[in-house]
Length: 194
Image 1: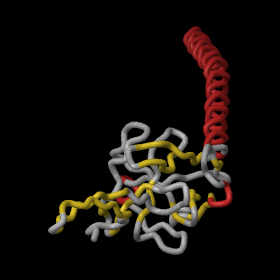
Image 2: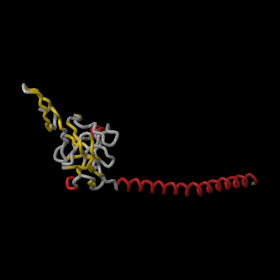
Image 3: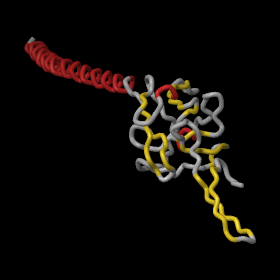
Image 4: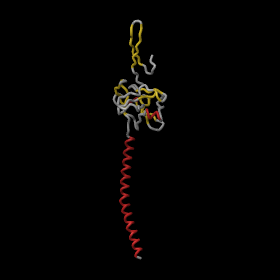
């Protein structure tokens, strides 16, 4: 009988310890769960409130469209009818400018030319004059234009002008005649220039 009492007392002691652990662990788990939920809501709310802003900036190409970080925006020569032809690995090197709501027109940009198009993954890509807009992964600083004139993923990439067209960089050509040397300037959008 004495053994039975000790076992019962021992079992009661273990039950009390387990009960105390549960009383400590359950509220702690609930608090952590609430904190995690609130953090997830804040992240989701921030993601749904993201609005792209498109502005103009002076670069070595002249005035070009840029995103809110000042990175040059490009158009892709294979895009047709306002739809993006750049997906998968193309979108890794040329990230589309996406927005979760109507994009905002910054300095020098016509709001009437801004729009969006639905990408194959369901996200909304910002367009300007019906051209889907992209940044370039190798433009590391604001104002860089290293993607200008690149040919990649089957098409040509150009910075975008305030009119919503490819930037036309003035190309100087020199011709020699019997009367001397003449320098002329032509706006050549795609090489080879005449």
